Image (cartoon, rainbow, N blue to C red; front, side, top):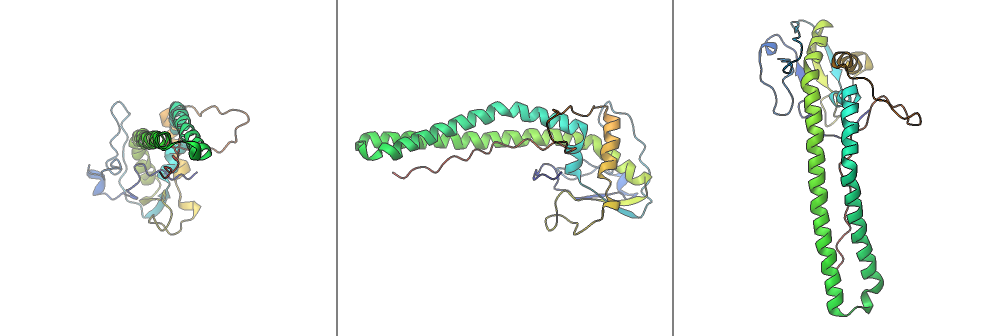
Length: 236
């Protein structure tokens, strides 16, 4: 599964050097994978020394969404966003209806009536555009919060798996070439599934129950930010 979610994936490399394992610093958007500090209340994890020489890859974005916890929480967010989607659609339909009214009877209206209708359309459209942007920002923030929380708990699992299996470097492949650092990598070096399987076992979150008629993709898609596109304001 590959989505276009920007989220917290600006950092693309998890360096597993012995020196970095003792540091606590990380990027502004990605939790510090080398230090692998577990969240409060989580069981302590022994991080092995990064003495391996293999290079591996992981699709962090896919791992977040494919995890049982990710599927559960993003499904819940999708349902939570449905009323806002409906509200925006209704507002957009209202603007479209007014535009059709202007187009169909505009020539029959006097100048004052036409001006009033045009102003009404403009005001409603501006309000709709602000609502759409606010809804997108809110949806993005909630997506980021979920992904950041999961990644905070997944980071030490990635580090431990890499150390236990002889990896000295793990590179994120969430962004394909040329936006990402990896031109090509074979499936034999990808640890995404192994990390997700381990995370699912440790999280204790059961796989989500899907309707019998739903396709079994193995991963949920991210909830779409409101995508209502207000129509262009009619010319006066």
